[in-house]
Image (cartoon, rainbow, N blue to C red; front, side, top):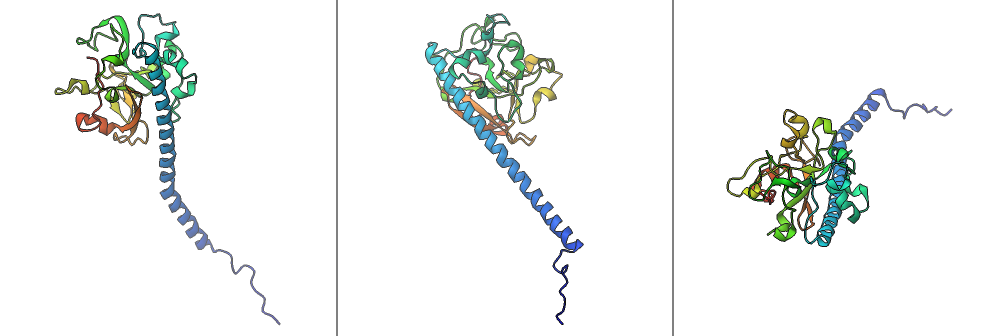
Length: 267
């Protein structure tokens, strides 16, 4: 008589199942951060591509406006006028609201002055226009929100080093968010090269961290891509000649020893 084979002989024991589950858990713990970094890298690349398109749109704007840049804010217009904000000045050269919204954010397109806080790509305040503001050479961020003249590419000696746009934290105006622009005048001064003076920048949301400051003293850059909370995160920067590049907050904070970017091209 043939010996009957135990049909359960090849089944896993409880210990073997637990070992397999433990191995899967360890592999998942190792691979999950890798997948997350790859996903964030893809989003960062998509944001950079959109930034490049936005840079080209600004170049087209300057070509059709005698070399003048869009105005981050045109305080000569009433708040209800859509053209008071730079997004509506540039929009006809893009005709796609998604170009203004990085896939890594929950930002919104600012179609008017009331929604300006929700933007997550900011234009430099150095392009803001205010007939009652400050003249070039005497700008004081404590008393001015704009210059009495419009910024022009013709006056820039090195447009390829001049930062026009960067990633910004966006949110409700009631929480002091002003994501539609960043201020190049609120960060560290550079005594040797004033034009290299910095905006507020971190890979943390400085608007939330510095709620004790008024909105005019905030307007930071947020290096949100692949952020660690230790300024290792990246921001995309669009320059005066239309090209775009990513920089870590740490690199930008190194001033001339790092990114060597001209932020305060108007003083």
